[in-house]
Image (cartoon, rainbow, N blue to C red; front, side):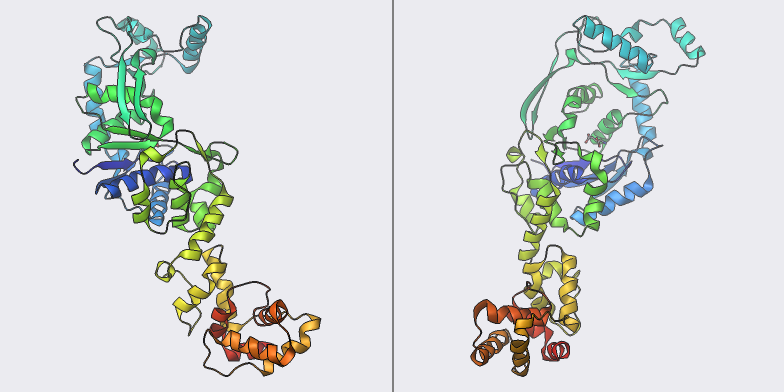
Length: 454
Ligand code: GLU
């Protein structure tokens, strides 16, 4: 196989959420696996709603996830190309003007349903005479333009079953009947394009070999293949992955705020926790924190992705985030970790990583390593802690110091088990839980412990 070229094609009309991240990641992982190229294409034909700030934000979100497009394109820069193809399709009669309003179309659909017919467009615009069209134009009506699907032999009104097949990368062989579909609208009344035609022109122009996208596009694929063919292009391979929903089964865009990549990042979640969940949920692989994109790419297989929607839940993401941090090597966080002054970053990380839910929690422990904590001493432990302070070993301290100290205190006070260790931990860290004391104590150091306890 020659190297694949994939594309992720968001509309920059808002920020992307974890469900969009799944699409971006599947494209990226596929490209990584096969040594292919990943194109980021902004589908910004809707000039009013597309914003540069959203395009910039999407780039930031992808970079955060570790996705680096090898090429960035925007449809708004390519209108001249689309114009040429549009005029050509019009000249060939494959794109025809329709003057029905939304209400008229709705009435037609209702009438067809009432007669037990599928609510597809009846092509009545093809029966309009030039005079009738002129009359509509004189009224101020503007046409929208439909693509004439190749579902007939000679007579456009004698529609026949016309099968289109594709072998979907994710869901296997698919068949749709162009005879049961409405001619798709490609150009709106205001002369703007829907994403369909520009997308096809671009996929062909950029040599896209695989269109990987959400299952919400399955129903568009038959007509799109027909348009590729009408333009003389070989259609790419298609793959449609199951969608993510919220924990109640609702669409994710409804909760874009909290589930946007921007929001998840601001909440302090790790990019690889998000990437792991976004790509592994709803597959036959276990949802595990994977710390490197290369390893996610090794796991990725479209056949492992289930056919039904997968529910996404923030609690699961938070759990995965903690699990990821508990196993991350120091190198993966070194650049982002706030290490206390005069402290070995690796030792600090190894001491605290098992206690983190989010990386930002490291600051609490950095604070304690730097300047200790307000001691927490229960009344019944006061005397014992007092004795323990006097027995604090001399420096240098190592990971053996904690047990040396505890053993000395045990010998002196007769305390053991929890009654020995807990009061010492609470006195030094101000908390009943936290990192292993043998690792933490030498990082805090004798002077700081004494300063706080004396
Ligand atoms: N802009 C389209 C969307 O976000 C792209 C669909 C496609 O990938 O073909 O839905």
